[in-house]
Length: 72
Image (cartoon, one colour):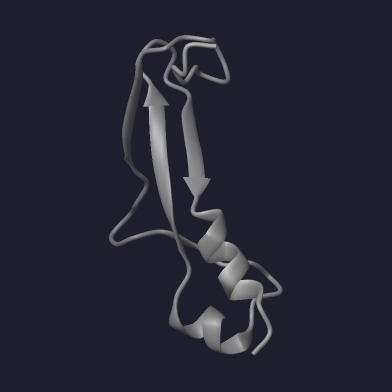
């Protein structure tokens, strides 16, 4: 494999990175996160879109999500 990312929908390689937001940043918070973690932060959602078909892919920092789940 050549390391190029491919669109999950059409297989194209014409992807553009970006962010997913509304009037502010969008965060992912796991349902079972510690209460203090749920109130103080979450994992930023990053996005990319395929410039061939318009598919949007969302991703989060899995290490951040795991840290939100850790018990004190």
